[in-house]
Each structure stands twice: as C-alpha cells, then as structure tokens.
Length: 250
Image (tube, rainbow, N blue to C red; front, side, top):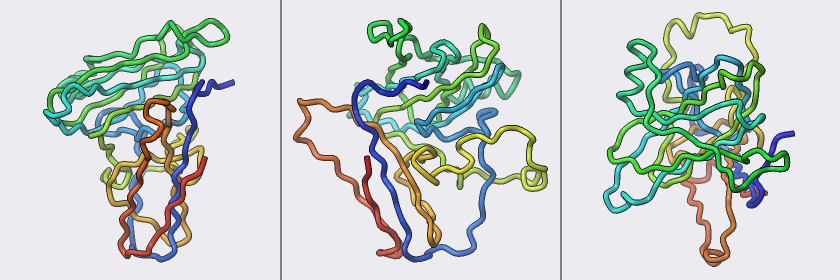
C-alpha cells in the first residue's frame, strides 16, 4: 500500500468553465520524460517507474537576491523505499546528457532516517539547496539498478519563484504528429487535470479551458501552529471576466 503524508491535508483546487473563451485550440503532444527536451510536469502524484527508466522533469527558477537564503526543498516518496533515486541538474549537465548520455548532477535526494515508517525503512528522501542563477533546471528520477521490478514514486517541490513548463508550451514536431501511438502503458500525465488523481501543478500562467471542462489542481499543506493565523489567498484572473469559477476542496 502506498504511504501517505503523516500530517497535513491535501487541498484540491477546481476550476469549472461556464463559457467558451478560446476556440480552435490545438492539442500538444504529451511529454514523456525521456530527456531534457521531452520533460514531464511534476504533479505530486504517484508515478510508475520501470527497470532502466529515467524520468525527466523541468522547472524554471527566477533568481531574487532578496530571497537568496530561501532553499528549494524536494521530497521524494517511493514504494518500495529504495526503488528510485532523484537528482537535480542544471542546463550544462543537461547538455552533457544531450552530447553523450553523461549522467551528471549537482544535487541528490538522500534518505531521512529520523522519521521511519512502520517497516523500519526511511519514510522519504530529501534534497534542499539554494540556486544562484536564473534558468531552467531539471529533476531526474532514476530506477534503482539494484531492483529489477517496477516501483512507484512521487515527489514535491517547495519554494516560491518556481514555474513549470506547461504541456501547451511543448511544440509538437512533425514526427510526433505522424507517429503511431506507442504500445506502452500510458503515463498518468496524459490526462492531467481531469480529476483529483491526475491533478495539475498551478504555474501562474494563463491556461485555456473549454466549455464543460473541469480542471483540477492540487497542493499539499503542512499545518504549523505558529502560522495558524496566516490565511491562504488564491487570486483568479479570467478572460472573459466570468469565464470560469474556482472552488477549494479537501
């Protein structure tokens, strides 16, 4: 059985369109995570990883000297606990992979021992660090070479100032338009946003929503009594102004 957070709740944000405000949109090919030019969007949901697989994710970081001391924290949960490792890479290290397949990184999640689960294994792995320049960075999840069977993983990234490339921003190449569908198990991101188990990551970017659609997003909240009086604020902008409504769900 997959492990859940020991504390905190998951809050679901749902947007429902009541008017069609964008016509003739073109669907983009869903990223598959095979490399730095074909990254997936981190959703915080459980993902299956097969033996020998590498799953690439990307995020953009805007450097702010007023917040240079604020670290980025990535937590990864796996089932079984040692089925995968997670590394963080910059554009230079991504170029090494593009050139000759070299697997270089500057950060790696390590297991946390003080919060063991019921079977005595570490509950999660964590990496925390500060970035010193703006740019695109990559998170790569690699299936462990010591385990032959497939496994499951999920990870979360926490810090303001991060944005994630949307599926709509990924250009569809001519080959992608004409290639037949692969005879492999589809990944969970293929129908992102269609329900609470396929929730999207809120990016702050404009997103098209069609008539009759619901789009689900998720975030994780860790309660801290020292900050219990601080309110969460969500602002939604629409064009047209009444083109969608937003609700919050637990």
